[in-house]
Image (cartoon, rainbow, N blue to C red; front, side):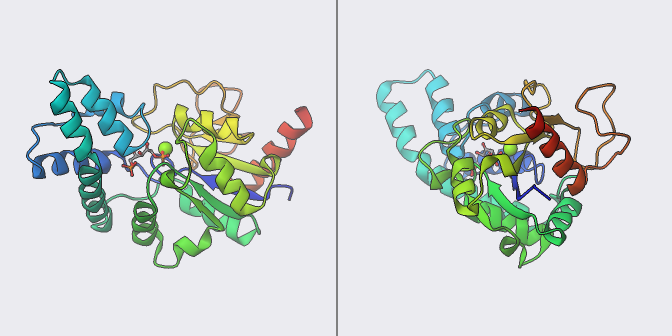
Length: 254
Ligand code: XBP
Ligand code: MG
């Protein structure tokens, strides 16, 4: 199999985690005496900025406040984000955030066919560990030969840095690997790193532009979308063999 590794995004791809992030943000705002409340429609807009700290800074910029108050709030962001991360991990560890359809099966197929696994995410290592441990067990982090998180690299998605970091850790060339993403920012990052990219949009990203995706599916355990060229041939589930096949066909076309 010419496919050497699958590199997974986390939020929205491994699991639909953004609602838990949104709740954790709102709870940490309240705990810090801030009257901010990110509704779902507002959060969908704010998600266009990757990174929780960067997202809060982008939000503060929208507030009509004196410059001194702006500076005060920006200075509070590291503490707000640390509190949000603690709350997010509690929500995840309480269970209730399952992996998305087909993810666990594909991870097992990769592991049993010698295809390496990587993670390239904007969120933090502790959030990755909380999700993997809760959904797959305490050994699951060890299944991944490379884990690259947002604060490991200078620039967050849509910059390719976190994918380039994962490729470096895997010791693989981009043309031997496939990225799995849910957002337009993530797709841009993976493509900029030279990766064949499969996109499974999430609740928060379904309206984004995925025209650059190499394969677009509702999920990895997919029901076919109506007549799109990137459909699976007759199957409803994306298997490791399908991915290897599509990668080698794409490489032949390149
Ligand atoms: C999506 C993000 C993250 C999360 C929040 O990450 O943009 O910022 O929304 O996590 P991914 P943090 O690349 O996995 O889709 O608050 O830890 O940044
Ligand atoms: Mg994502």
